[in-house]
Amino acid sequence: MTSESTFAIDLPLPPVSNQAHPLFTRVATMPHAAWVDLENCERTVAQAGICVLLVAGDPVRYAEGLDVAVVLPELRQHFSASYPQFFMGMVTAADEDAIAKKYGATRRPSMIFFRDGQYLDCLGGMLDWDDYLVQLPTLLAAVPKRAPSIGIAVVNGDSKDSSCH
Image (cartoon, rainbow, N blue to C red; front, side, top):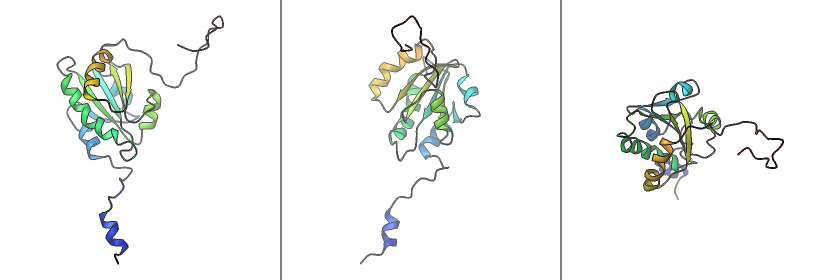
């Protein structure tokens, strides 16, 4: 008969909530990257050039976040000729819900894109490499728009359509 302690040794330990996964730390400590929290978020996205915030989520619940953390630096490298100022912000676990809400990122993981401090769009989930290569040139060159955060829909009283868009 095997004791319980033998089984416990073979089980992986759950991640500690205040420690970041090594892949997230890798992204945040690369050149042209940093940890982003509520305190430095506005300053970070206001930079010249492209800024991408990665809201990865808990890697146990959202394993795709680890995949996106690997792909994001590759995307930066791929698009560096067209966008030499391409900054990566790894959103901290403590502030990811607030930052995601602020920019309308409803899915984990999400990459939130800005150009020259203005919101461009958000891509949720992990995509195939070819899909990134097709979608990102259009996204990065798009006209900035308002982030789909919390707001109040404005309805024109003369319109029969009650939607905001």
